[in-house]
Length: 598
Ligand SMILES: Nc1ncnc2c1ncn2[C@@H]1O[C@H](COP(=O)(O)OP(=O)(O)OP(=O)(O)O)[C@@H](O)[C@H]1O
Image (cartoon, rainbow, N blue to C red):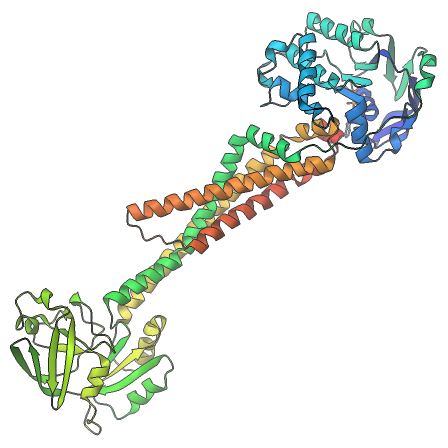
């Protein structure tokens, strides 16, 4: 027996039900009639325990459901209520059988037993042929039967049907009503309808008019004994992850689109960060080719001023005066050449034909092509060969490290050997000054400082400056484009996720109506979000891998370090989780009645 006492319901300022009372029997078919907007669905929602925002009291078999907490209401809905929705509320992407079994997921009985019951019910309803058909491929009448099967599968004591025949033709309507009439023999069935002909099936009719429930005398005498209290079993744990996985499969296409959009955005962003790596690679290539890249050369005599200026600058090291030297003998194999006069020359601006400039500490020498030819016709073959250099009393064994472009007989040795040449020249007039810049990044600024002091130095500052400015502009451009791609990716995926979640209010409302509590629904959505995040991270890894592979094939210097790869995957996962939390926050918090109305 259901006792409704002094029930009032208002939405904002409009009163829907106005301090109205009625007692309903435990068995029989009751039709609920009333004008559109009179509050029929509102009343049904309150009896079903979807909506508990009202004043007054609803007592079902001696238990006031108005006083139940959210979890108890879930148990009540799950164990006692079968609800047939006006618009079926069946889940697309799921089969007929899966839709029906959804109501059994929180059932303690075994999966086999539930499936057996579902199949028997489908048989009775003439839907056994369609059990494996996707719900969206069914006709209106078939959908309504599937919805009835879902409402009956747990053999509820109260069946509430909101216009179950609204979308059906007369013959289908009659079939459905016959069915509901049949099951009302041992339970209470309340049917909302606008159709007077449907009322001919009813044992009683309740009218809702001006916020009041009006009925002919209802026979409730026979079920006084049923008022011993509702049995409210503890919530049975459903596998939120299993449900999340199933949902993930159903919405897979949209989830793939979201994952791709985010992964591409983050990949673009990571690539722009990798432009720093490209810069470093180009600098190291430049250094390999031009080993005298940090050397500076200032021609002319000095009274100590320039020397002091260079030595006092922390960015500069290895400052020394250079002098003209004479009578240098070079010997390779059985060939000897004498250089009568050798003037110091700038190293950083020399172009190398083969090999590299001599490096300090390596005992190396570079020759001009005309000098090299005197030791062998194939000058390239000379690289790596050992040569003896004699200057005064000094004798050195040096390896030929390179051949540089010059039209006369000349050579370069590394700064340490060169300084050794000049050991006893203190007091002589210098020809030039040599210095090294410690850091690559300071080459341009040191040249600028010397220019500001009206000192003309020969360095690789122009090349280095050009390299840096090209890279700076490229990196800036790359960063802007990648931020744009990232923003577009984030925007698209957020919109897709919000749209997807908005389309799911009915599904969440339905689960709630079937007795899934907020915690389980929340866990289900979180599981989906985690799966989406994992999928996006994997997509991102695959995209990074493909980009890396393509860059190798087409010889593009795109460098992504393993750490950046991990970071890219990790940030993709985190971004997806954040967006999904934002997109599903409202969804998880929405009350079932509100969710079902959306
Ligand atoms: N969540 C809500 N917020 C505000 N107003 C609401 C809400 N739900 C229902 N209403 C209003 O309450 C009134 C009763 O709605 P209800 O759906 O119960 O009517 P009904 O009798 O079932 O109508 P119909 O026969 O057209 O389905 C309507 O005016 C409706 O606009």
